[in-house]
Structure formats: C-alpha cells, structure tokens
Amino acid sequence: MPQITVDYSAELDDTFDRSGFAGALHPLIAETVTTKIAACKTRFRRVEETVVADAPGGDALVHVDISLLPGRTPEVKARLTEAVRDLLTAHIRPADGLTLHLSAETRDLDPSYRKI
Image 1 (spheres, rainbow, N blue to C red):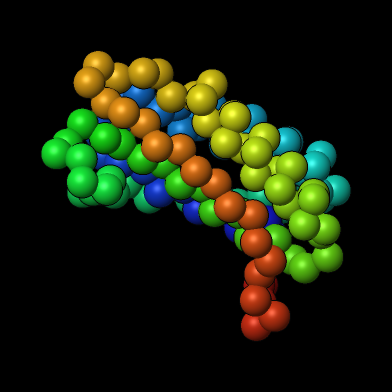
Image 2: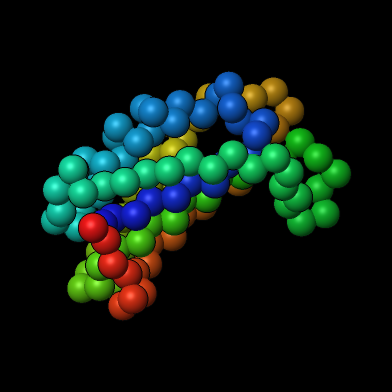
C-alpha cells in the first residue's frame, strides 16, 4: 500500500519523465496520507491508442490511480489527488501539437486486498 497505476498515452514516451515523477510522487503520498515511502509501489502502463471525445487526434492523456487502505477522509484524498495532478505538469514536457488531458483519482482499496 499505496498501489499506484499510471496510464499514459504512447505519444508521451519521450516527454514524460516517469522516473522523476515516481521519485517525487512517493514522498508526496507518504507525507499526505501518513505512510512510508517504502510502501509506495508505482507501475506505468503505456497505452497505445487513446481517443478523447470527438478529437480527430493530437490529444494525449495521463491518468494516475492511487489506491489506499481505508481510513483517509475525503478531504485528504481530494488534497492528494489535486497535488498529484499538479505534480504531473512538472514532469511532462509539452509536445508540439498535443493537447494534454491529465487526471488523478485517490480511492480506498477493496476489503479483499491482500499482500505478502
């Protein structure tokens, strides 16, 4: 815990500093939700094809999903989500002709969650 998944458009391969983002994300999460950096696990999933609304192309997206053990207030989760969204902008260089769509969500893990 926390389990972090970052889905990103393939067009951002050369402009998204994923390692730098994770390096800044883990301390941010640890401080905001009172956990240890060592508990943070992030995986990045490159998405080959994305379509945004009725755009003919030129759009790229990044979505960060953060799953936590239950117990954080909605306000803490909202504060974390906004900070993560803002952090994304510092780790993605603008690419010519691309419109970026950045989003994040913080949610509770299902009670069935287990780890070894």
